[in-house]
Structures are given as C-alpha cells and as structure tokens.
Length: 163
Image (spheres, helix red, strand yellow):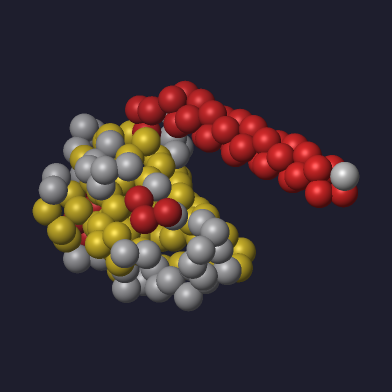
C-alpha cells in the first residue's frame, strides 16, 4: 500500500515537472518569436537599431546586447550587455580583452572600458563604452558590429547595428 502511494506521488511530481518544463520552453519560444528580428542563435549578424536589444543563446549562455548610443563624443559608443546561464561562472569574463569592433565587416582598433559591472556567478551585466577613432567616421546607414569573443566555448558572437 505504501509503495503504491509513494509511486503515485512520484508520478504526480514527475508529471508536474514535465508540465512546468514544457510551459517554460513555450514561454521562451514565445519570447523569441516576438523578438525574432533581433534574435541571433547561429553566430551570424542580425541588424538592429539603437535601443533595440539583440539576443544570442549559443553555448547555453543567453547574451543580450543593447546599443545605447554615443558616449561623450562621436568616437565613443555605449552598450549594455547581459549574460545569463545556469552552468558557468561568468563574473570573471574579461570584457576589455574579449570585445572587438567591426565597421562594415572590418575589425578596427578599439578600446573597451567597463563603466559598470553588476551581478555575480551565472548572471552578469555590464555597461561598456567602446572608443575608436573609426566610429567618428560613421555615416548614416553604416553598419558596425560588437563582437563578443571566447564566451563559454563560443569563439564569436556578433551584434550588428545600423548607424
């Protein structure tokens, strides 16, 4: 009798876990489909505009990057980066060494400054300022790409915007 009751309880718990998992996956798919123009899971560039977040989920890490516009002058651009996962500590990720800037597909020299970094472990956010003299040469319609390198077994994640 006790074995049957225990088995019934375990089946109910298993069923609830499966239902919860399916609901979570469905909610995530709905989130992705509502922002599909800015979703990047293949490593290829998806072109966005200022203030529209772009997403990448390669390697089990969800990365969101938002271009916040010019810094104190036209040679600086600001970005917000959010990284989330449930398997790897991301706090020690070195933004200054693992960010590249591309303009029209060509990597240009850039200095990355971390203005603010928060979170811990599996959930990290940073406000970045990227400075390059090549940014001051951008014209309306030019494309530029923020590249995040070497994040959890993914050599490159590209986030591209139109100036």
